[in-house]
Image (cartoon, rainbow, N blue to C red; front, top):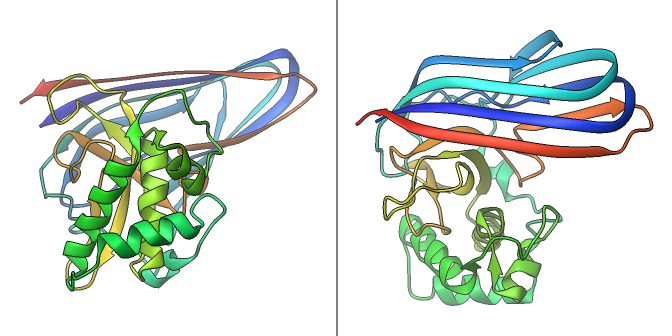
Length: 270
């Protein structure tokens, strides 16, 4: 599938800011499941700084802006060809060992309820891939998809207790459960063209990857009950949502910040 992407992020301030810096992880991953046809990232009025690939293989680019600033606009435009690899991250180059993703974070700490869910889900299952599928299914059943009931700082334990959440909550809960049973797991940010039923989906999306011995990293999207396929564009990964954030920034000044994000995906060819 060939997907067109338009992603605009606008930070607005109610008072002029003196300067701003941005660290962007907004570049499609390099692996066998996707090929960039064209891609551009721009911070309007900003100065492009250095870029590098981190240990997880993600490209990160820095930008800076001089004030006075009333807003910061980040524009992403591009086209990517995707291939369905049944969730397997084949051909992706990275340096970080899988064991690095056994570390817990505040968002992915496994409380008693998550530990019980994980242990019950894999009871009687021996294979790592089968365990990962069982954990993803258990999380999907335990947390109903419902926008607006959680927030950016909701933890996996809180979402499970609530029984509702969004893709970020599903990913955090799966990561926490997988790590508890000894499977390295990480958070992935990206885009989704449409849900499994073909209906349009909120384009900015997140899911989890679990490391399976002998196979490598495999993606699981409990929010949609599937593994990532050619409807998905992968950007980057991290220990949790904060670590994998596509945009990180800092503005100097006294103004209060507001945020507006518009993401649109369209199939150019199918």
